[in-house]
Each structure stands twice: as C-alpha cells, then as structure tokens.
Length: 150
Image 1 (cartoon, rainbow, N blue to C red):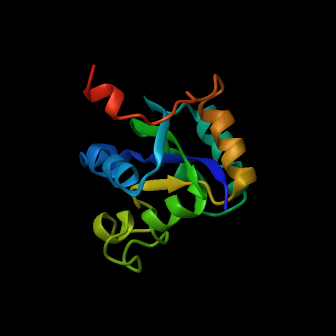
Image 2: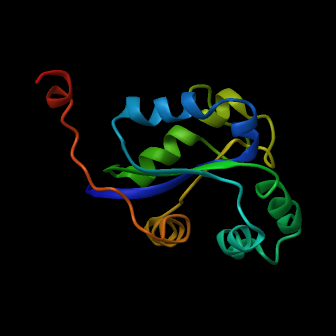
C-alpha cells in the first residue's frame, strides 16, 4: 500500500454526454487528489502513441478514429493505491457487464464507447502520464481549512 499517481481519461463519448463533472466528483469523493487536468482533442500522433499496444488488433483503426473524434479530458489522480482504486471506480471494459455504481456500470452500454480509460498498472501509468502531461503534474497537499478560514 503506497501513494501512486494514475492516468484517467474521459473519452469523447463521456465529454459529449456531459459526464465530466460527475466523473471527477466520483474520484474526489473517494479521496483521490486531482494533480493534473487538460481538455484536448488528441492528435493522430498522440492517439497512436497512447494505443500503440493495440496496433496489431483488429479494432485499432476504429479506436484511433474514435479517440481523435472530439475532445477528451485527461487527468492525473494521486492517492494510496490510486491505480487499483481508480480501476474499481471505472469498472470492467464492457459497460453491460460492469456493476452498478461503477462509471461504466452506470453510463456505458458498449465496449467501444465505454466513457473512460484508466491506467492498468504502474508502468502503464508512468508511460501515459508522461505522454499526456510531459510538463509533469502539480504536487500539492490537501488543506481545506486554510481555504475556508483566514
């Protein structure tokens, strides 16, 4: 059990459906800390780098076309065991099989349009964070009281 930072991306279908705020709230409610966020329409180069592991798969070209079809919201979240915690919040790839209460269980019906991506391990998280946030993330400590009282 240790502090980790993981990459999470709301895909074009989640952005188009107006789910970004709800998704962010779920991660914040769980106790993860947002340390980087950007909205971007991925370039072909960025999409191909991100999904290079799938380049030989039959669904690759459709995946690249989908992920570059509109804006995504790329995020970095920090917390204890952040990678597994985020994946539990997200749920299984197929929304029809995902449990209610998970993001995909509540909002996704399809494997191809499944709202969200989350890193699946430490090496993947490091690669994806470096790809989407080459300038790094913002390290900060949560201190709500100092923001409420002078």
